[in-house]
Image (cartoon, rainbow, N blue to C red; front, side, top):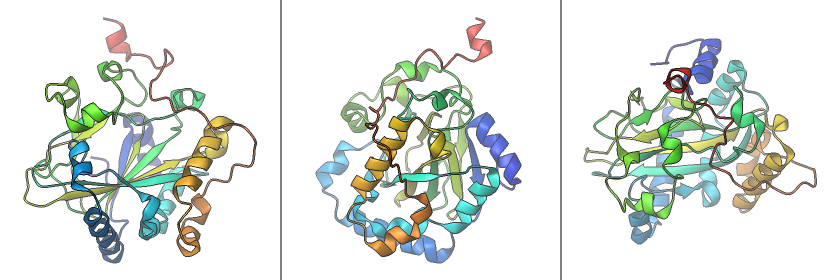
Length: 289
């Protein structure tokens, strides 16, 4: 477990394993405000849509929920990221992911969308997630599962298909190997108010929710060292963020102002690329076999 570390030690964990935990950065007011937003969002979702995302649970983007601005711009979390050395962070979107009682396992996947950018093959992640769970999590209610180190090394899972396709979200094939257990995986149970900081390139999943209550996480996508990314990558982040949050009121945007990308060049946005090329190598132990 990576809690109770210094900022430098957390950064070392993030670089080596692909994740770290920052404890107690969301207070009761912020959690309750976010829970109210989740209840509103879930009440508006078409049940047929939820059937299409059976494995992950609800996948509700932040487009129509400016109430999430307080969590996205949470100064306590941002200050910790800054102390870790994660600078020039820009926001793309947040996602409300609520797994209902009895919700099945989430499949293994990685979420990096810019594998054409050289940064994707470096020790500076082009894309990170902040996961705020709104309930204490355990294996019983669907805690996070991770495969440490897969943000920097190739894994069998890289050749098993992309994330979030219709077929895998619906669990068309329950025997798909992306629902299996793998050597080296770890469970990451946390308390409500903690945040898991993870590298988007790392394979992650979640256990089934065997409890009688929903289990919700707000996943926030950030891009550190934004100005160091290729211009097409910067352009994509800029236009996606602004397009998706065009209807947010000014008071909500003000709460995340330092995080708003402001690309002023003329380069066309990148094409999303979820598949690493040969620059992502196998771990030495595997490559030597």
